[in-house]
Length: 522
Image (cartoon, rainbow, N blue to C red):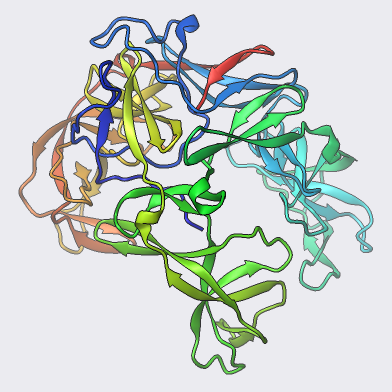
């Protein structure tokens, strides 16, 4: 599939009041996965505040989300007056959700599996006939779930889960024998109860049937070549497709996603079938690449795509779908040449498609009259707000992360416009002896950009931010993928400067909207 990808070596344009698009400021592209991002409108004070571009009219986004009777938008209110929609909340079940195709083929707002209250569990049994089901959760640093999500027993083309209420909590003595259904043999097999502190057992309660979740219908928003997918909830809610799925009228309405084309340009590339290597010989002779298409859930995708690393990043090489291949198929497995189970279809790779035939996209900074400027992905007929921002006061791209003061703040560094990070380095070429900490800046695209800040994510939760120090000229070594390697151009090392107060960055607070409220999300 042609996935979303940012143009890390590209450019960001800044919108101005007089011409609607700005000059190239060379800060790098902030493209990438966009979600239910958004901004403030005049009613929340985000569009007309102070700043260098006060009074600049906010460009309309293609999709405006809305809260329904049950499904409400979660909006992050920033303390500079801007805001963004960051998700959906099912107020009946009290969980975050997103619109996905359920196992019955209907699009519904299905739960996020974060344990609040839905969490992924395993179905086990207390009897040798596998007739008395229980739910087993393994919990590591998250709440014990209040409801269970388990893998569905019957295959489907939608989300492969079933949902259950929980009965009473259960406990078992050590070495208690429990049972499970072996997915390969279908037989009832034995296991041993896990009595560690991370394991929790419950009786399985009543099934939460698909019709208990809010259904939605598909719509499209956009006035040009491209349109953005929108979900219209049965309760009056409206949400924009978080993966930025679009459709391209020039391709006959075929769906597409942001990605880097073979020509190194950010484009809306057609959703594509994956390419795998198969053989038509039972001895696995002469394996060749082929496009793999699901035989039961064929979505009608007319292309295949391979990800090829060229220069400093991956590019998508797109081909037309060729002819269907007949016969049986094999692959080289762990036990030699193995037959591929039935269920998928295989096609030859067709002709290469000229990347210039796909719609180009670019990233644009939108001043909202406040400290933060919104990053929009724009193309022919679409404007999609992203979760990346630009801090005009600090002149740096930022995204919201948990800061060391416990607040969500727009901290320097994004996936596509990175800052330096704290890393362990060694003076010894074998990475032996004591390590020291320096700031590593990985300038993969050799842009020559200089970092301003250092991110420290080693705690695994809160992000600390430091000022960048001085360049380090001496050779240092780091452990990468298990090997000790030297830090060499275009990567660079710096000393770590003083910590920057978390309170100096823009903070955000998540709020659940009331029914009927709207927030521009894309």
